[in-house]
Length: 460
Image (cartoon, rainbow, N blue to C red; front, side, top):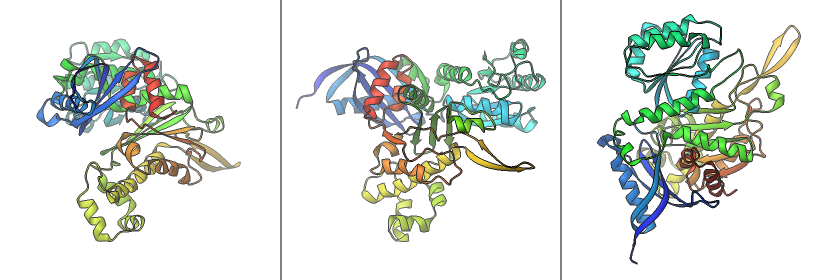
């Protein structure tokens, strides 16, 4: 069969991952019936110092799968977690208050947080900032018209480092002019944002989250191998986890409270978008953001496979898989990024289930009983997932494994009684086309098209 010479498409979205680059093609974006027309992939070429090599190979793979010689596109936009993603350090005043608020903003934007400090920076903290070599530094601290000195002191110490790194200030409103003066003659580009913790028990993380993504887009081209990507990409580039969060928030507005799980080779990300239940909110001891992301850096089914094996235990795996210890050792020894035979898939399913349950347990809050002079009092702490209507699975493992639906259903069954987990009535949705991150970045400019494509992929 002769291949067509040229194919015209509206938008290509590249997901530049740490190991794989995926390219998704979409058509009729400007109509009421947008279409997902195909996907190509190739290994990411970070080590070759130019991610465009992998990007071009992924486009070639897409051409092959569509049976065309060439693809002409109007726009190419991207998400990226290559080159270690977005490295951030976060510096606040009190760990439970401003530091936590700043951390929530950074994680929700898709950052990888490499350092968190509370109070005045010590010499060891400053040494660590240099070692981390962050892409962005976030300074917070003090409610509006509250404590001022810590943030000013920390800003002075960071300014003295003379790093050519963007700095975001999201602290006490009274410090703004002072902070501007501190960074005036430094190479740091300064961004001033509304306070992340303006009043006791009030979080205001969306403005900071938005600026982090803008800063990432502006500065991502300085990451290794990303210099040339701007030559091809003519739209936004945002961190991949931030794109999944955007898609989750868009979907929540349409169908109701949800969590999105993304089990990857190196990490497991969980995004929840829910206000929680009234009953739990009444006894919650500190505020939680509506949109929250946690990333478990030790729970990956490829790079961190041995961590999960250790968590489950060898004996348990031998029993669950009904195989000999020797066979299990072979599976561990020959573990590949993508399982190919039945037994390899079953092994990855065991790993995925453990990653899912553990990440939900770490993300969700708990009921706790306090005993005082007036008797027992129940309080809640952490994120309330009891009002969740949908669990959405994206990423390689939860869109491709045969028992992906059973794995997500097992969350409710693992509630220890005091966990603020989703209940058994929660519906399971699978991102069948594996395009959720792509649709997150697409939603920045074309929200209606992104939502329509997302609902098709989830079979809604």
